[in-house]
Length: 590
Ligand code: GCB
Image (cartoon, rainbow, N blue to C red; front, side, top):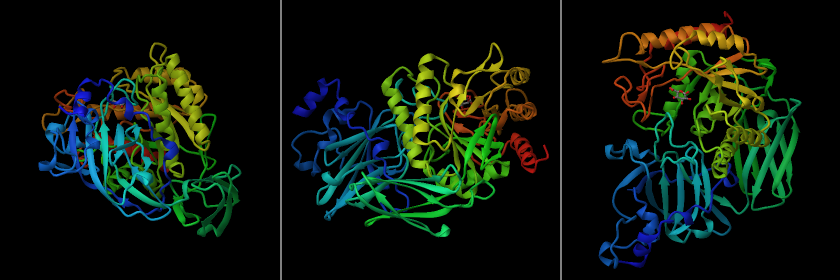
């Protein structure tokens, strides 16, 4: 038995050396408008339930013809089965459907070095822990299954053929964010785009733009990687704006007088923005608007807005969590048909294209991190992971006018540990971005029948998930809660709904019937529209979605609260009920 293999058999702490070099928001590259080499396509693949790969160091095995190898091997990264990237392995083979553990992805990278160029790898998302190896060297690991991360390859790339290996692990644990128990499917793998950026020695690594607080200016904020000084040329042609912004200490900031037309769902006006530093150019399409809360109102560009919303997951019958342009467009189209001006992207950061399309099509968005139910609120490592996911999301999407709310959690038990954890998250979000509202799905005190959550005072919008008529059978309690509560800030009904099975074997009446679901919608709408502090709703949910924990004969592995079935086509009757309400609200007739 070889030395590596022998050591591996006795090494209980096999994973520790690979957890120390974290890839975080600090290294996340601004990619707007940049060309990149796509690394999508076929990657060599192997599931690795026992983590043999880390123990035996598969990543350090050099490519060689089998007949020339001198030691036996349990896996050869350079030959064998391939899978497409992006994908979720559960959707590729039935035997991988419930697989949780590590999996290895390997592909060649051919490289010709050029003086002064830098190479940055970007992974759109990998669920959940992703360790990156290049030519046998460990370059870092990323935690969090829904945000992008970058790793610089420059100093480890060789002339000619290189080998990139990613070890992706989707094991549910108590200290992760989310933890072991969720109501959505634990898809694993590299399920968003992978890219390689070839950049000059100094480049723009971040660019943020927003409307100045006076409304008469645009505030620009740039970070340069690889140079302390120089000039950035910023232009917004449609505003006739051309500005030189000096860089000091690697940063460039400016407040530029300008009066852009304001973005809103009715007028989703976007401006092309371009920034150049030396040989490096980035661009973005940016809308400018204000969002604020005043008492129980939410003000968009100074005017009260009522959020006609719907919640959505990232889930597809055939693709799992892989998002396509067509699917996103169809989703927004359904939201338009419903009469929505708002979507809640639950319960984790969705594909970045979602917010870009929402900018273009005119939707307001709630974006969220998976601080879901009872995660390990007293564990500092769990906090670091949650905060990193939040800051990565903010960094990725802070130029998106559609995003008005960062949500920091969902239905978390009201403990002291949770309160300090989530207060810290709210502070971190505000420090990173003071131009948006902070929310969370908060709690109802069911004994006193009123909205009551110590977290509320640290939020701008109180999200309430309530299932009166479903989990809480007595719908009359909702009327009492409405009466007993007097929140000093806006409440958004971030969830409500009922399962409605359709098709063969579905019940005609009672729980899980379409008729019952429709009745719940009617009752909810009637009660909620009478509450003046309720400033919107995003019922649960647009489409039925896959989940391990729901296995009764009507669910069969799916949550059936969708207004549309999992085929994303067949509408249930509650769809028309909500649409009628939203269209009437939009017309101002109720
Ligand atoms: C909730 C959760 C959501 C679930 C939903 C349900 O409160 O926030 O993730 O899927 O209820 O259907 O039970």
